[in-house]
Amino acid sequence: MRPFRFGAVLREADSGKAWAEKARWLEASGFGLLLVPDHLAGHRFAPFAALTAAACATERLRVGTLVLANDFRHPAVLAKEAATLDLLSGGRLEVGLGTGWMAADYAGAGLPLEPPGVRLERLAEAIAVLKGLWADGPCHFAGRHYRLDGLDQRPKPVQRPHPPLLLGGGGPRLLRLAAEQADVVNIGPRVRADGTGPEPGDGGRAAFLAKLRHVRAAAGDRYDRLELGTSVMQVGERKAEESWSAADTAALDGTPQVLLGTRRDLADTLRHWRDEHDVSCFVVHHERDLPAFAPVAEELATT
Figure 1 (cartoon, rainbow, N blue to C red):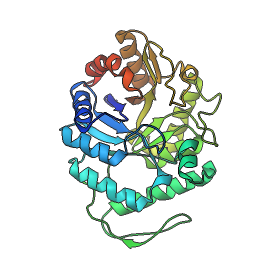
Figure 2 (tube, helix red, strand yellow; figure 1 turned 30 degrees about the vertical axis):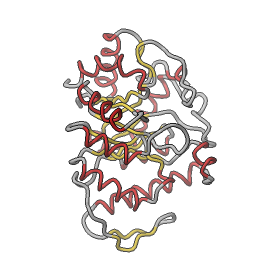
Figure 3 (cartoon, helix red, strand yellow; figure 1 turned 135 degrees about the vertical axis):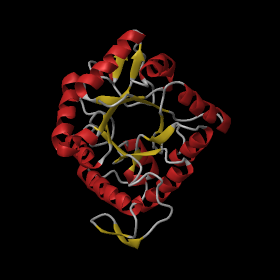
Figure 4 (tube, rainbow, N blue to C red; figure 1 turned 60 degrees about the vertical axis):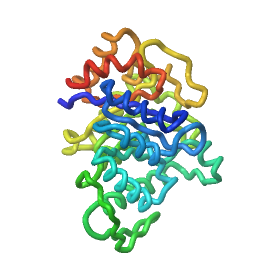
């Protein structure tokens, strides 16, 4: 049975000092992982600069992304950035990667939002390129979307064979790719093809359990090496949705993405999902929920 791991998504701060203080607070409060999202629109830090600052302000806290939009960077650029940050952090990086999905990012930047199948094919190729560049020796790759001719990058990541790779999502094809290629699978909602929000009817306990079964079946012999996780969207008492968020948390009741009740209720629910369904990594999605979740993280972090 895997031990619990707890993370939090942080998006911005008023200054470098304030950002460093947030990172140090997480490290001291039972959280093991600080994650930064990757969107062009809205009030959010750029991932790699923010993660470097957080790593420099802490000693044990792992840092990562939830998740990088593959369409925003060529994988050779991403491989170089990630390897550098892994070295500078002393091997504390986790690379969360996805296809890219939010329509506002693409429209605002004048980027084409191609069909999900194309974005997923491109993501699969990008993963192969990343693993090739992080390995020893030159990388040769010839795909539909990327071509590399003997590129050999330095530095290599400190973590071998590479930093943990996290893939997040809810569609069957992405979950299959995650089961086959990732180290961490973050179970989330399936997103509409047009990038405007979650797919209607995809939430709830039955859908969440079906995704877990899908990952288990697709992983085969890899299943015992996978870490399963999810993002927690409500903690303690239900709160109004954030204006910038596309989530509809009312559709997520019955899943570990909505944790309502007392501290004891939360701890019991997390134990249930870990012990009965192998979900052991929980990421608090909203900073507003950190004070309510921190006592639970401190209690369970070593179990």
